Length: 290
Image (cartoon, rainbow, N blue to C red; front, side, top):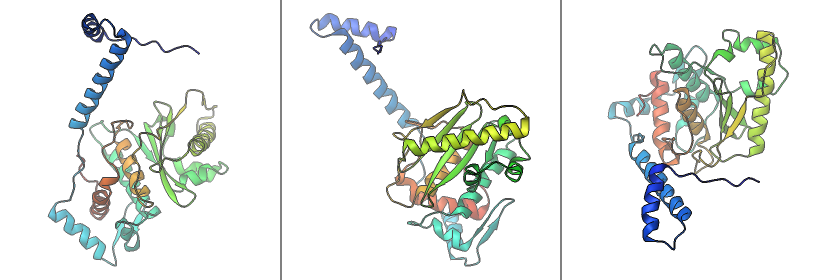
């Protein structure tokens, strides 16, 4: 196996030479390593200082709208693709598991924001509803092909998709069509086996869709799987996975890259995010991001 060769920056090398001249018994390579580690820690701390912070509470007016939604036994909101009823909005109270109604309505709002963007700053996305991955796992047919009849998915920037894991857990998948990358985010860690299973399912779907819509063979060779188990925020209970999934898809739908140091929310933000999502659904619009 080839040994990784450490190459310092010129500035770091000069600093190391100065220090080494005073500490002749120390190994120069060790000094370089320590300097680079210190630099990385400083950059990480600086990034944390400028990273946006999730608010701790809604405004009084916003909070009144949330409380009214929870009290309304006839609560109902409809969009072009989904509906949310009172029994579902109740699931955004603390300690409850989100269902398809909430997640699909939320995904529809993400899709609508992208479609209505006039700035050109947001990615072109396609939201795959909570039934999409189930269909992917079966045989591709004409009826499934009609789910994407209005769009050529291979011309998009992103496809974003919630995945229901065995009826007990939600995870988020993102297909970056430009980077040719499938991203798999699991707020309970997940397993590499499940990430690979999702990746293979998506590749089979792409192959079938490409042949059906474009009449040519899909090239899967450039595609990769990104499964960042160590850097994805983790929930601290058994019920917040749906909120994590929605907010992960929200961030990616704005074109934000996710990974170490890139996330703006975690388990501590769940109480606020649940109430924020009630407000967003009640008002039919996404909350202004921080």
